[in-house]
Length: 325
Ligand SMILES: Nc1ncnc2c1ncn2[C@@H]1O[C@H](COP(=O)(O)OS(=O)(=O)O)[C@@H](OP(=O)(O)O)[C@H]1O
Image (cartoon, rainbow, N blue to C red; front, side, top):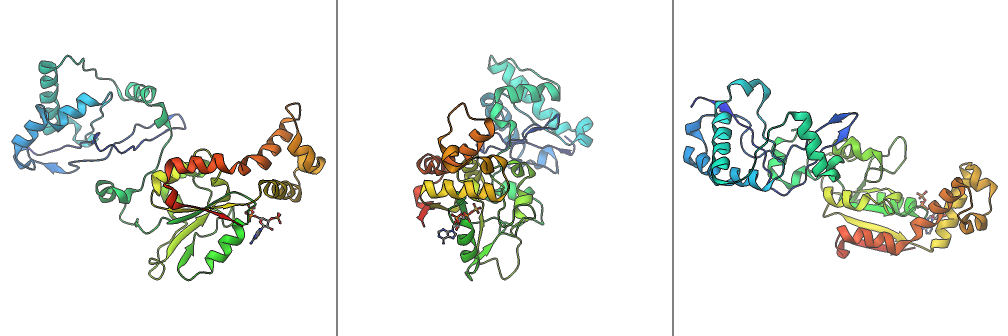
């Protein structure tokens, strides 16, 4: 057997590493890259060729195929024509499966596989970023320029109008804390876990936390006040920053709602300018959609229990610090 390249994607690590359908492009999830991304000889297979044969004949590779509805194995395109170790591996695997199981093995062109995959795993149409530093295999194939010291350990999650700007300013003065860099569009807020910035990826997020020699020992933090009520934020934050500490500021929901109403008036929101606070908070279903939307923004973040409970589904209570003003 001559030299060949085999790339194996490990489906058994349990890590969710999905990709997305974006701009009409279907990108299949590339699972954790497990074994070989370099050229190897059959005889030099780690543990000996019998290890590879064992994996094919009822071992790890066989189980990978057995337990996953869709298996994707890749080889580098340039090696595709003469990847003899790949051909050996998969011919052997298919023979073994046909001989010993009743599985009907199907092959499909890439687009059809993508369609099938997203049909089976619709939740994976959207990404859920995880910390590459938590898995040695991810970390090893990650860009050399990246560092594990570029994610926050503390997040002020809001809600809006509870004094989060002041809290952010006070914490920024502390010598042991480093705030995220200000955003051009949203000032001190990064706005990553709650909206479309999330799709810009973790490199985009990490750029808010530059590493420098005198800050690496400091605790990095960011504040985004509308993470608190954003439905997707707890799961996303916990996937990337499972050990982060969170601060939520709890204040009177009425004061908070009124502050938001005034905020909107100050920003020239016509609905807030044309209605009293009482009209906004007491509007019924017959009110205009703009009025309903304003009412929602006034009241929804104040449903503290609902939102805190959602965060507690993803973070242990010991990491969430509700703070009253
Ligand atoms: N230390 C302290 N204690 C209590 N309240 C405080 C404090 N600092 C600021 N504030 C009041 O908080 C309101 C602004 O909240 P935020 O900074 O969270 O607003 S924002 O969501 O970032 O826009 C805003 O409330 P209103 O003045 O009622 O609008 C601030 O006055």
